[in-house]
Every structure is written in structure tokens, then in C-alpha cells.
Amino acid sequence: MSGKSIFACLIGATFLSTASARAADLNSDSPARAIEDETSLLMGGVASIYFGHLDYESDEVDIPDPQTQIIGGRGAVSIPFMDVFSVQLDLLGEHTLDKTGDNDQTIGDLTAAAHLSYRDPSMFLVGLFGGGGLSEDNGDDEEDITFFFAGAEAQGYWDNFTAYGQVGYLDGEEFYQEIPENAWFGRGVLSYYYMSNTKISGELSFLSGDRPNGAGGNGELEVFGWGAKVQHLFDVPVLPGPAGISVAYNGYNYDATNESDSPDVHEFRIGFDFLFGSPSLIDNDRRAAGLDLAPINRWISTSTNEIE
Image 1 (cartoon, rainbow, N blue to C red):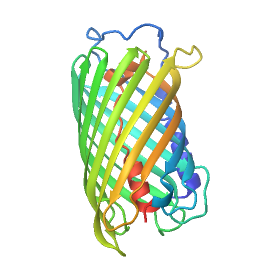
Image 2: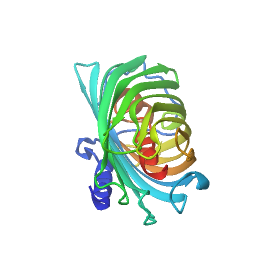
Image 3: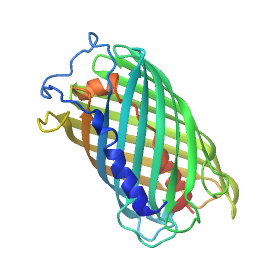
């Protein structure tokens, strides 16, 4: 898949299923409200676009410029059935804006996923997820790098707090050197809703698995990640639902055995988010498309391309 194709797909992901949108009556300045009396699931979703800056540890990666600018998008829609079950579909992509011409630089990636869950919006969610994707570099690999993943997830709701946990399995195509294989990962997120449309989140993640390398033999890869995000939405009368802005930071530490490269990577993002089908951010997160994914695309692209 070409870089232009990935860019087109991520823009498409940003506006996934907007035909399902409906108008919402929202007061974004009110405190986060309890939703125990609003237990029905909603058909709704989210569309986002973001701009980011990646800062790789300069002496630990194999690209001439460790500073990279990116654009990305995500679309998700949740479809409820039988009152307490829902299927959520995700599509997300990312594209590198400043190409250096180095074969080891990531050009873009695309990921698709589905979540099947049982949810009581006043208490908890349990479910399964799975998907796959591809990552493209600047020519080092003759074909796109592909990967697949599956796992289980759960959420717990307490007043204005939401706890979110995921465990899963990740495997890349064996043809490609340096891609994580037979890997297990985990992720934990804690969110606080200061108001119904204002959310503050922190998360930790971990990946551990094999990382074949023809030159250095079969090695292992461990990645530890951490991050924080602040998101605020407004009622915009001309749009079918709340819209707003988010700022986020993500950090990663890569430890690849049989390699000299074990970089820290720092990522800064500013995003623009749009909801449809839900009157507020807390309603979307607990009654509609409130699920997401671990940073699988970042694990794959950095391990396969930027680390030698």
C-alpha cells in the first residue's frame, strides 16, 4: 500500500460512519453527572484527527533525523444489540509528513479492529477485541509489514472515574525481520471526568515477545509505555454532536536484545475530536464508542523500522 493510500485511508477513518450522526442537546459546562438512570446503550461513535511530533533518542535509532512530524486519524462506531451487547468497529491510520529518504523510516500504518462487549453503563463492561494492520517503510521491505492481534478487555465505572484494562496477543508475519512475534501485551488506563465533556486520563502499557533478526539471531523485545491525555468538548450547534480538542503525551522505552538500539521515544499530539450519537463525552465512553486500542502501531513501526 502506498503512502498516499494510507493517507487517504486515515482521512476516511476520521469520518467513519458519520451518516449515523444525530443532533445532541448538551451543556458542556456542567459537572460530570451520574448516569445510573441512563442505562441504555447508544448507537454512536467518534471521529478524530491529530497532528503529532515524535522525538526518537538520537543515538539509538537508524534514521538521520530523530525528529518526525505525523498526521493521524481514527474513526469508531458502536452498534448495540439485545440491550446489553454491542459491537464497536475501529479504523485508524497514521502518515509521516517529513520523509528523510532513509529506508528505515516509517511512512505510515493502518489498523482495523472490532470489539464485542457486554456492558452495564452504570457499573462495568467486559469483552473481546481483535484486528490487524500493516505498516509501510521507505523501501527497506519489499512488501507492507502485516500484523494481527486479539485479546480481552474490561472497564469499571465509579462516579466520575473509569478504569480500563486490556490484555492481548500480538503476532507479525514471520517473513519480516525485526517484527514482534508471539508477543503478549497489557494496558491500563484510569480516567477522571472533571465535567461531562472534560476528561483527564493516564495510562501504562507493556509488550513482551520475540523479535527475529537475521543478522543478530533471534532476540526478544520489551516495550514499556506511559502516557497522559486531556480532552475537552464543546456543544457546536452546526455539528451533529459535541466537538473539541485534546492534547496528549506518550512515552516508550524499547529494550531489544541482540541489538545496540534501545531507544526512548517521546510523542506529543494535539487532536480534534467529534462525537455523534452521544450527548456528551462521558455518555460516549460508557454507552457508545468508548473503547480503543493499545499503541500497537507504534510498537510495530518502531521495532521494525527505526530500530536496527
